[in-house]
Amino acid sequence: MIEVVDVVFEKRIQNVINEIKDIAEGFERVVVAFSGGVDSTVALFLSIYALGREKVQACTVDWEEYFPYHARENIDFLISCFHVPHLYLPGRNIIEEVVSRGPACNLCTRKAKLDNLQKNFGEKTLIIGGANQSDSWGIRGLKLIRNTYSPLFDFSKQEIFQICQIMNIPVRRIGENSVREGCVLKHLYKPLAAKVHGQAVVKSNQVLLQTLHQEGFKSEIANVKIVGPLQKNQALINLRPFPNPKLKSIISQRMTDFEEIDTITWVDRPLTLVIRANPGLYRNFDSRYWIENGKIQPDFVQPVSFQWMPSTNRRLRTFQVVDFLSLIHISEPTRPY
Image 1 (cartoon, rainbow, N blue to C red):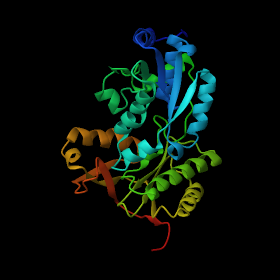
Image 2 (image 1 turned 120 degrees about the horizontal axis):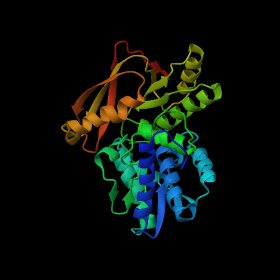
Image 3 (image 1 turned 120 degrees about the vertical axis):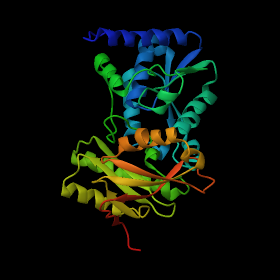
Image 4 (image 1 turned 45 degrees about the vertical axis):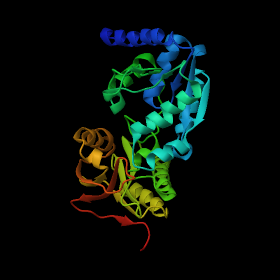
């Protein structure tokens, strides 16, 4: 192993490598669920380190247009670095079905990723994922359940980045978040009830990241949240550091061209999100806490407070942000009414 000052941490890494070897012995093959993010990249690297690249395959669920900006390029680049077999599995229809009843990242992970891989590879294959202490799966789930295994289960996100530094693991960022990045639909805070909802979140986030890339703007957080009632798409633009007036104007102008977006608002002050939730979720304060502090707040550049209400929509499985409030609420309409 590469020399490190923290001998205790080095020992933890070695223990994970040994554990991968021990657990993999009971299976015919090993497949790593690979998204191209830092978690699955480290999981893939450690699996190769433990078993050899000839015994490891990477598999990516293909979201098609819901892939983040540059994600497919990053995946292909990393696979070329690791020299392992790689397969794309269709997943668009599954993710659309899941999100049609409200945001549900954990359910999507289970159905669109893990169940999809289980169906294609079977129970004699060890499925390795990147769950860790920075996500609810790592906090509330199990490290090993049947043939699904999370070697980074006991590590924080900061520690995972530390592993990258220690072992010289290449990491490619999309640009939307310095810590975590993922599927574009995680920025849709309402059910994917119509095509226009998906187009709004895809187009807005793509044009934001493209513009930042073209302008050479380095961001810590860059995303567009789509909120509002089903008949109205309201875009909340999060960008840190905040852009200069010229760049802000360019981004705003490009988004006003999208007929799928009704208003755009720059998040430049604290705000309150008004949320309608499935009654079961509404009564579950632990789940609400995780949504507030684990899912929503880390993606916002300003403090967020929450106003929860039970929903009467029987199709809503999780929640919908139906409105937002701020001290001075000025939204820019993208087209006349």
